[in-house]
Length: 96
Image 1: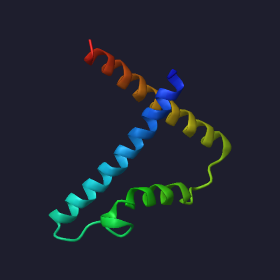
Image 2: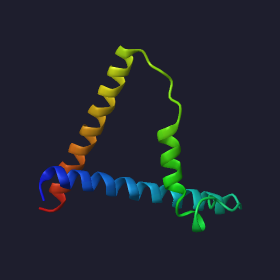
Image 3: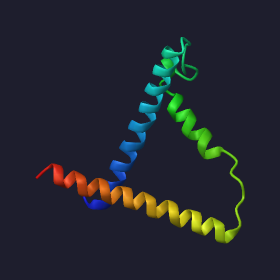
Image 4: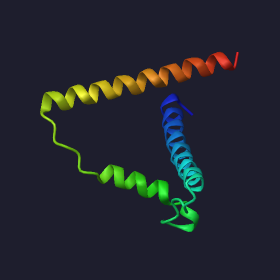
């Protein structure tokens, strides 16, 4: 398995784990506030994180001017790769 496949698999797995951690957080907050929590989609809310992701992707975003759009995209990409490099660097130190 080459590095591109590994990074893609890691990215997908991380997103799925974060989606279910969000569901867990909502359930805990629901019990703390003495309410039912998110169980609207699917069996006991299992499909709720996927519904939230679809809703987020379909959300109407404000139309930015072209230079602002480029700078926003550039900043987000720099932040993502800085976090990824930091994670990979710290992970390799843990396994030594």
